[in-house]
Length: 147
Image (cartoon, rainbow, N blue to C red; front, side, top):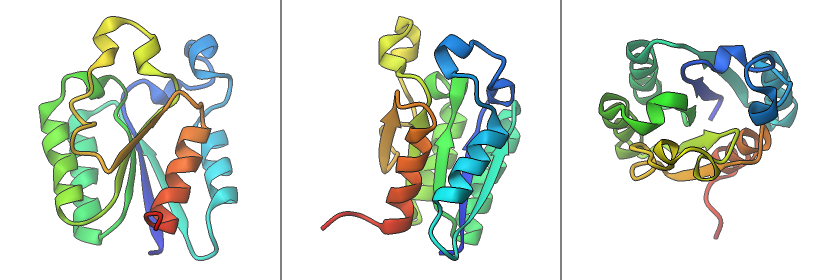
């Protein structure tokens, strides 16, 4: 494995200024720095963010075609995007890990955030640990499954 695709959905480009009481004061550049420092030798991080559902779906297709594991924070798409869910399922059906991550704990927030259409097809879900959710996902996809 040489590249891990780290995909972020809508509004996450505003990290650092959007609801810092929920998401913290760090931004995507800080996340990139953390993940690059945490990555094993020979593993590169391809971190992307979009507010466009179609673009996020095409990135998941790219992950399948290029055989890249995915760390996915679907953000608001988590709760209703069946199109995103179906594209994410292509990743796991191709035998690649897809870890759904969330900075906050959706289950401790508004009721509409309690449902994820992605979780059922994800390899795993890590939520509520801030940027450590991503770091733990990176550890998993680069180390493989435990014995």
